Image 1: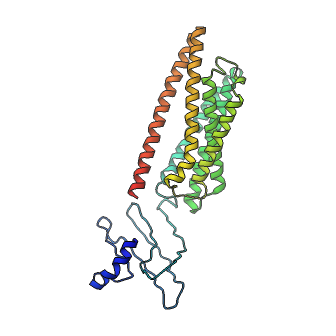
Image 2: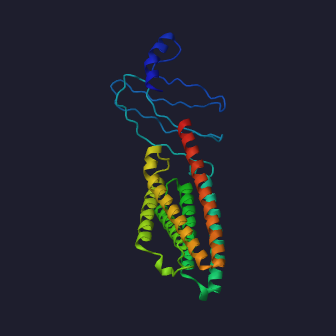
Length: 311
């Protein structure tokens, strides 16, 4: 009930269409019996009033909101304290988070299978392993831990209704390290290190500085989004943390494709046709991945903005 309705309510009460100090609501046609309204009133000279605990069962899937409001224009500086506990038939996970538990469970299985295949090949050809392949092994290992930790995070949240901060922090950290190492590997390969040039020369101070900055920005973003809160941030607040990660990602993409262009020219000049063909395929695959990523980001931004306007 907005401020305008507060001033109109006394006039409506005089007409007999409502009672002053009560909420005017319209019954839902799609979900009979809703909204449910529970009231609490102040007695004479009382400064506090309590609404008794209630349990509400609803068998229909949908989006439900709880509003706390006061309708008496004579009340000033009203403070509402309390809590609401929401539980789905499958557990305490909010509706938008419930599918993620299954997703991370399946992804954990996928990473385990990938790890078994990779480590079997690693053990088979261990004499011929390159330094960059050790980095790929690290990424796969980090991915296994990250997916498993996210699954246990959501499973614990669903079981108890309290998000386990420790597990969440570790899941976020493993994910941030994995994304950073993966980007550094792609950048080093794009520069030709480990394939055209010696691998040990790829980790220059500039590369390490970019990787460290990206890790910090990504870690802060994920901690702010996942630790201590379930609700999404407002657009401006989220943009403050998303923007540095997006800028650093764009810088990675620019540096990677610039390095790829230089490496392709170098391979062509040296007439290393086999490696040149591999790098051309690598460039095409990266271009497709970037296009898909940009499309996904635009998709998320569109639907988040739509939710904000509908809300």
